[in-house]
Length: 491
Image 1 (cartoon, one colour):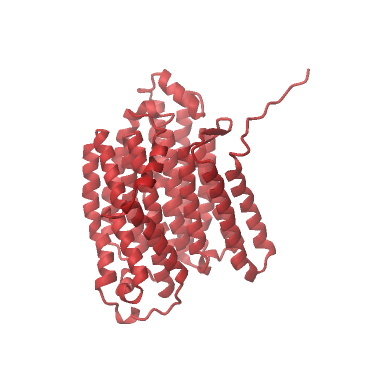
Image 2: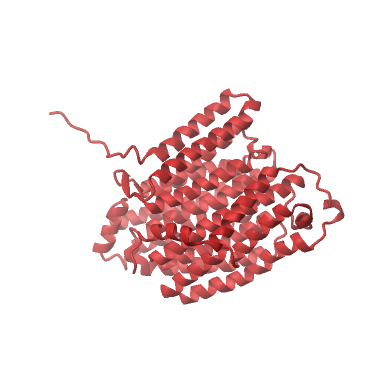
């Protein structure tokens, strides 16, 4: 008797973004080995950008579709497509910012760009996962690659320190997440999102200690990746020590990927247990807003200030997930898109100033920037205003949307926390704007000694203008966010 093996059903067309990212990562690595240093300086970034453009093109061509790619292991929906595109945007920004930053690629240009593409592949797997095993495989692929990228400036002690800290604390977060996923499997008897959803609807798991512990540990593990308090300890040191292009990538794409799987997990297979996990996320959201804003107030380094700010921003974003409604997810996705572009603008300005001042990112070197570099100063001003949530920027529309979603979902107190947190954040965002336009540079910083990089100004201005346009004409991005949020059933 002959046994017949049946493989999984694979939609090869829908799998193309993953295939392009994986194959592209290997090709870029090989190009780094065989090419000369002069050739690889431009060939590898161009090849990486071509791969990312291919991934983005495939994702855009499949916008609006809802298909199963590999059985129930990977799924393509408007939500996963949109979140994946944001990750690709973060990766493109990292490549562009690293073009003139030779320090970021001291591990080797081939290795640097290949690891970046492998990280993107991990993010695509994580965001599209329909199974706990695929989820963990994706998060480990992106994490291991980022551990190395954080330490890619191998001649700088702070970069190596950042890589080691991220490795140790990230491993703790991954272990916590794995324990949580294992407990969810133990309580439901399956690793498939679909089967877990069925089990939570049919079984009485509201009082199951194993299930509740699994939800709690899973929340903690993913909170590490989002850099939400009180699991934020690694963020300031790693953001400051890592190369600025990688810091930009982590602050944008990594946060997008982690929030995407939080949305899919908690509004999908765990939706029936919302009353159990919503208070946990509400507490994390509140603590992140308080701790992030308090930590940012006293910072003198712009990278550390933006790191603490990202912790507070994680709190605002999680507030949209707490209500577990289509309105909340719509607000979260819209604000996340705005956050990505204005964060790119902020770090582009920081890198430009660092390049001109031999790596110094202290607030004092930004004094008088409005007079000597008005374009950079304008982009930074728009970024700070948007992060603070002031009109007419996209950040204002995003925070208003989050407040509206929380009030509509019965979390008025959390909406008040968002408002109070935004008011406190003015203390450090306006401080940066004041320093740029109203302060005179110290004698030793009046004449920057480094070279100017005009490309960084272009990146900063384009990103800042997009953030402003999202506030002046928000209909198109809000409509796209609504398409993604409509997959969430209203409670």
